[in-house]
Amino acid sequence: MITGFHTIIYSSDEEATRAFFRDVLGWPSLDAGGGWLIFKTPPSELGIHPTSDDPTEAWATTPYHQASLMCDDIESTMAGLRAKGVEVSENINDQGFGLVTSISVPGAGWLMLYEPRHPLAHEL
Picture 1 (cartoon, rainbow, N blue to C red):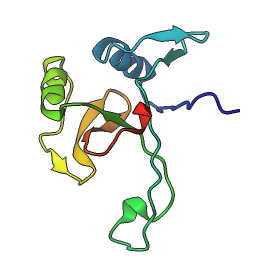
Picture 2 (cartoon, rainbow, N blue to C red; picture 1 turned 90 degrees about the horizontal axis):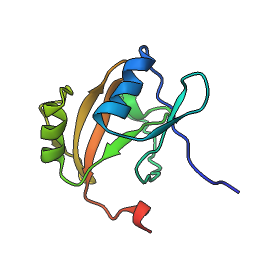
Picture 3 (cartoon, rainbow, N blue to C red; picture 1 turned 90 degrees about the vertical axis):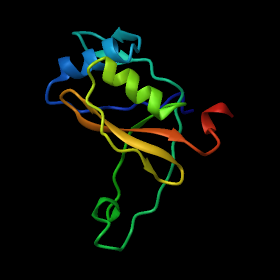
């Protein structure tokens, strides 16, 4: 029986990335041994999206995986993250399913942040 869903973020600076999730986002963690932190994440969901045959949509022509953070109020979340020194995209895009922006995670690149406009599966 499946008991959970484990996500991995690969980083060129794992200590900075771990510090971001621990100190900036305030996620609790445990040490799985040797300093390998495993973070307790907020509730999660899994969406399945189609790939595309359109070469102008190169991001979706082959299967891949994506992680994103969800929030209740994107503007206040962006302001709160900026106040903590996080680099946040200036743009908010309406993608239909929600309002979307990106935040920079030290050592791990950009991560999508969105305010969903769909029912939340993690509330089932």
